[in-house]
Amino acid sequence: MSVMPLGKARSKIWVLAYFLATAAVLVPAPLIEFRYYTIPFYFLVLHCDNSDDQSWILTGILYIAVNIFSMAMFLFRPFHWDHEPGIQRFIW
Image (tube, rainbow, N blue to C red; front, side, top):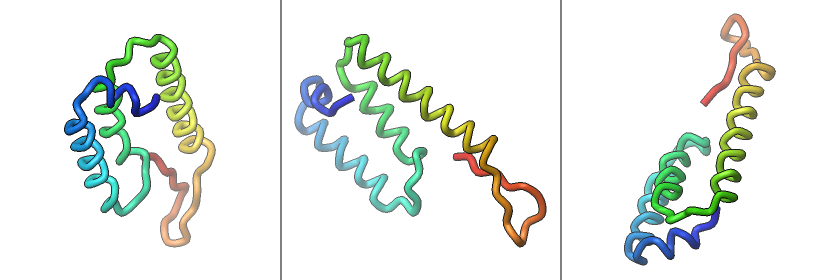
């Protein structure tokens, strides 16, 4: 999904405000994690005037791939800390 549909569907001031707000949220974030990008991505998808079926299918495949990756990391990649007993798992 490109940014071009956003520029065609919204005014230039709205697009500028979107990118400034996104930068204001992402730049001071202490970690680089997917959860910080989800809200700006949802706004991007919702405000693009996209009626192309191929883009929606590609977006759905992307969501499925990220979810499969997240579940695989949680289930099959546990780790151990020296100061904590037992198996630790990571999920965001």
